[in-house]
Length: 533
Image (cartoon, rainbow, N blue to C red; front, top):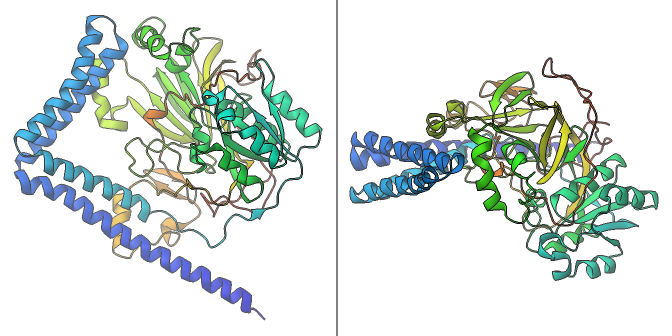
């Protein structure tokens, strides 16, 4: 008898049909919104709308030049740059308002944003019927808490008392303690779950220990920013709510990133930002220190000349480079600006900044076509400069690593336990807005997961992507990486000694740690299962 199997297959077929129909609807909405964004200015101003578009682009270019002057220079030129960066867009808005084009321009932008969001949603592969299994409560949970993190969130939200009442052994972190050593000791004493209430820097160190011992890990967002918790869908305004994962939780498999032997849950930043945070005055005066050191780092003798190789593609002459654990969404993504759409793609996001003068700063408005802002996805990234060591900002914490630094992804390496009901549950985003595919889908000629473009490997923007993968890389706002450097959060000592990897040459294979097979799936990408260790 196969009644149960038939019912399940029928349900999956119905779900697939619903997904296809929904994709067609979103594709048609995307095309209608795109058409509307073009027609609105044409109806309002006719062919003169082209001139108004050029005026808007010129305003953005002047604003970009102003920002460059303000960051890369000091004295009078910095003041002029600050004024220009504000005056240019204000003048454009005033001209639009005086000519009656402000309303049509805003409406056109809104329709364009709707078109892009709908197109990305239309190209999103449909969810499968299965989801993450509800897991049993741990017998001996261990929680490390930093009482200084996030301005004292541990005390303000009474996290110690609430964790102990939930059966957890709580350890308060003192200045100077080795975070990883404390976690390893807890494992040796029988802990079957590790948790951290603190910033992302401390989260990463304990997460690596949990990964190595295949133990579940709980994130309690008690830091200042907690970007990792945000992308897991946790409520950063109520860190105590994360404790519900102990008794009513689900388990996800997510990736970890590595820069040499240092783990990161968010990103590793090279170049300008990493050099700024080396200044001893940075901790107490971030803005003043940044403005004082940037001119020399951007245009002076101290300017870093980074080189990177990402899966065989060489890029040089970089001032800044961000390598993230899974790609960030674009800053203009209306659905999830500057956030990661998934944490289980097995890919690193790479954002490169290469601006050497005023002309290149003005070209930034062209995006990736300018050559000043480069976005890529890669499984491995090799970074080097003309020195033996490289300063790196890992989850907002400064370290120094031997050059070259090999960054790699550890797919599905971490078991993360989160509350089954959480207010910020991530909503899956779509692929890049490929308009020819959207047009074919709107006509019913292309269904997600079927046909030529639904095979095990497809291409978007000319590059291969695995099923469910996207090219949404780079978040300009994430370049700072400043989401985990909390006061009083020590780390393991930085690596020293010669690197085991040669300078840029053939891409190194690099093995990565992974988790054992599991039947549980991450809700951000239900179709993907972790690879065996």
